[in-house]
Image 1 (cartoon, rainbow, N blue to C red):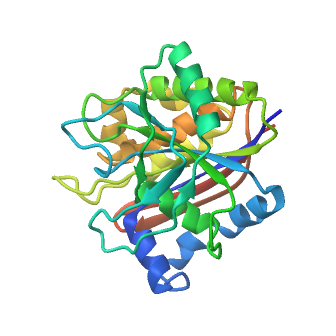
Image 2 (cartoon, rainbow, N blue to C red):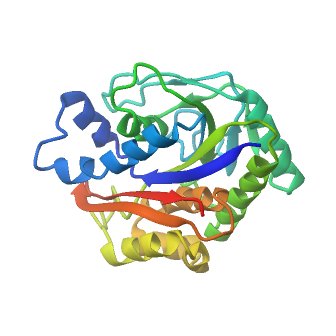
Length: 280
């Protein structure tokens, strides 16, 4: 049977990719953030997962305001990274796991989630940067990918409660998968930040710490707020916490064990965070 080993959660700011390309990991501005990743890398090296199920949000690469699915699941054999205009070089392509993707899709539809199925799908910085952080020396990715995109861009947005339920449905699919793979779950985005408007540069450390404190043992606490209230507390882009919530749901109902966290303000006007949770 497949086994979910745990998950890591991290910010995905495009500027992180630029810092990686320039080799700025030891620069004073960037070092406090990059110093949060050695424990994640050590854990991945020890566990050697075979598959990653990644919850993220697309930034206009696959979906734009005229066509924005609430939830979309990749079912492709390959996922290529493409340029979004941030000046980043192309990152490595990912090998998919179509059989597992279809198993998850069937479970989600059976649980009455109306997901968009993507047999062809590109991936952007929200997905590629977390892997570059976790596997900085990899010539090719050592695991296969199942990407799950959540709309955090165009209203109406899914509620935090619905995203947690989505993750829980994914957990049921993974628990019933007959393969022998070790599976890592990833949630990307956030934490609090707003890139435009009157509140540009807004961060909320108190709310960020509340989310991090609640994630392992009580994710339902984060789901009490409406999506609009989450935006008020965390900024218009801080609503990417929905990806973290869904990923936490995919770890299962039992309390997870937090084994590492890192929090730093700011990078690129963003409260950047990294967490590592292991399944009990």
